Image 1 (cartoon, rainbow, N blue to C red):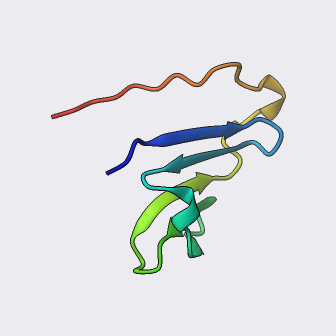
Image 2 (cartoon, rainbow, N blue to C red):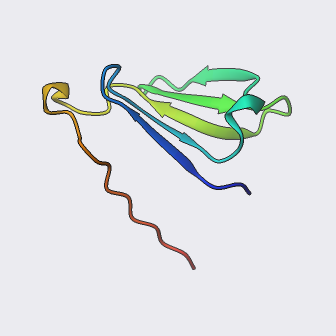
Length: 71
């Protein structure tokens, strides 16, 4: 697995998380929960986009706190 990449778009109010190279995205699938799954050619999920990430986008984040757990 490559590094996990997290992108927050304050203008679009979206959060994108990638588990693999974004260039490998072949197809997107909407889940109906304001989440879009990014899949590679084999159908493996390689990332996702959360729409309407902040309830009030007028209070845009200056940084994105991330906590990592490993077991």
